[in-house]
Image 1 (cartoon, rainbow, N blue to C red):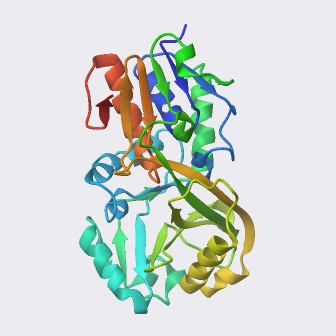
Image 2: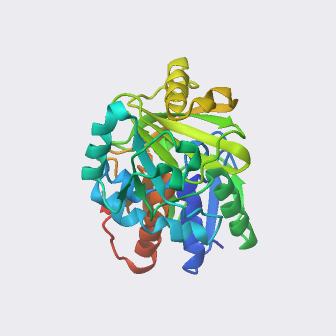
Length: 321
């Protein structure tokens, strides 16, 4: 017999199931698509565990709670603790100065090649030594395997919270159709090249086309940063591909010869303040609004939801409807 039911097996639902198990609860996990895959926005994430970089544009809650994410994921999957690098082209140096004023826990370095030899063409950057990154798809698979070892399987079925008795955690993202929740479109490109080596995520600041590049195993790089206020679920646009590849070329022209492996797009659920929350409606808890902070904030959201279920405490991310 399950102690609670979790609907949705994206990063939020999986983290909630794992956290429930650690608290001594037995969760039942249901998703209409089954195991994680290209059908959800968790699949298309960058995997940056970068609370201080995000703090340049995000609310303080993201910085505070995001600092615990790397330790959570390190229990489950490989996490690279190499920090983050933020730089700008010479003509955009003002962008770097603004980013520095808005963010914490970084140092300005003038020897970029000392950290990333393949970026020797760039002279100045901000180094966030306390940040980390992971491979999101590997992390999802590892988390599913850990849950399976504890007897928690993902049931493939379409259910609604009203159909279930007892405590329910609804982690269905936009499918939950909550008031105030909107979709923010994100697009990404995956390249492979053996000519460039990076050990940490790199953010290239640009007034119109900012870029982040996250290294993965085997010479693979994930490129992202498009962010559109749109509910369009079509595949990636030609314009987005051009912008991402142009920015990558500006970072290092050798990206022009990289193999294009994959493109993708999806909608990320977000509230007006872009801060995720747990919304209480009787025995139903909604975990939602992760926006672009899925892997960074899902552990904190899961922890506060399970803590409320077991102790009745309401953390700062918990709201009663």
